Every structure is written in structure tokens, then in C-alpha cells.
Image (cartoon, rainbow, N blue to C red; front, side, top):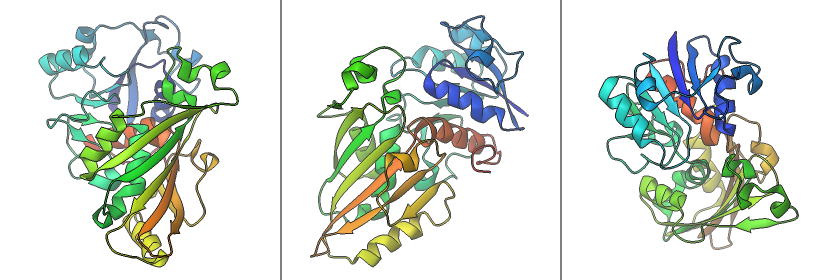
Length: 314
């Protein structure tokens, strides 16, 4: 049994992490940090949790002394530094999985998207950067054909407002979102840079937020150097994800409902121009699950030498 600490437990992703961890008999939540809910039973947020657990307001130094095997940082971008510094100073062998963007561009950290970049690099790693939700959807849509591309891939993404977190903003204001579709981050979005770096190919990304709570759909416009057939297009995705239980490949166009509340992702809608040089591929996933919590537990299990999908896809 490995003991896990969770920092940022009150958020939407934190709630999903508590639920997933409670479904495993090889991982136990050792502590859950939330200053806003300090002293309250964790079961107030997640009924599946150990009834003896209460939310705590631990400092980074407190956390580093807790003696857990791994720590999940589920906090906003820019908030990880003090926790990482304290853990590295006092518990350097503890595994850290960071769900923020703070270490996705850090060469010293492993980027954990096992279905694309492999599991060997994650096994035994102690510093793992969890990919972003949009970035997961985008890379799943583009990765199988990245060597075919003749120019930038153009990605149009729409997310539910849970992706904006729990801190009030216009992007999670249901009144502002009512009967609305809200574009944001129009140039240089972090996920655009993240996908470009990891895939090794140029792309353009336009994010939007809508009035539904959870889920992502992402439409990828792709241009190829050489013509292909629709059969070749379908085949390369089926081959790429044939051994991946969390990735479903289908001909129909994936919609929000196909990905929401599911632990994995759906890729499909394969459409090709008459000349075979332009394709559209669509992916859908749950931003709180495969886009965050599920992927974090996959990475955590691989790093600790445990079964990757226990409690996730059973």
C-alpha cells in the first residue's frame, strides 16, 4: 500500500482524484490539503473517502515531513514552486505529480502522456508533469499523423466551464456563459506551446468555453504533404491506439457526450478532402478525468510500479 498526499483537494480535479484513489487497494490517501475546508471531513466533498480523513491546512514544509510515497499537486498554475522546493529538500525520493503547467516545459521533469510518449520513461520517475486537458485531446488527435503534416495543424477546442476551476471568473460564470460561446487565449495559449513542444510540429490552437460543466471536444484541421486514402487515415489511428484501453477510435464524429464522465478519450470523425491532402479528426474527453485526474493516477501508478488502470478501467 502506497500513501498519497493531495494538495489542492477542494477543486473539481481534487474531488475526482479522491474518488479514483478510493477505488484502489494499493493507494491510500494519507492527507488532503485545502485551506478553505480545513477541519471539515473529506467525505463532505467526496463521500467515497476514508471517514477518518479531514482536510488540513498544511504548509509545504509540513507536507514534506509527512512521509508519504507520493504527492499530487492539483493547484493553479504558478503555485507549485514552494511545495516542490520543500519536498526536494526534505523528501527527495517522494514522487511528485504536478497537474499545473509549471513543469511541462522543464527538461528535468517527465511529461506523462503514456498513450503517446510511452510508459518506460514514467516508470520509476519521481518528477512528473501532467499534461493539460486540451493538450491531451489535441495530441491524441494529431500524434498518429504528425509525420504526414505539411504545415501547422489547426485545432478548435471547446471545454466545459469546470476547466476554469473554482475561483470565480467570467469563464465559469454561468450567467455570462448562458446561450454563449466564449473564445479566449487567442494567441500563444499555453496549451498551444505545450502541444507544439511535445509533438515536435507546429500548430495553432483556439480555445473556447461553453455553458456545459465538463467535457472537451477538439476539431483538428490537418494538411498532408502527400495524398492518403480515408482507409489509410483510419488505419493509422486504429494502429496507434490498438493496445490502449482508454482510447476509443471510431468512424462517427465524437461529441461532448461521448467523452464526458468517461475515463478515456474518443478519437474519430475521419473526414478527407477529394485530393486526399486535407483531413479533419475530432477528439473528445472529460477534462476532469483523462484530461486531469485519470491521467495523474496513470502516471502515479506507473511511477510507483503499480497496475496502471486499477480503479480506472475495470
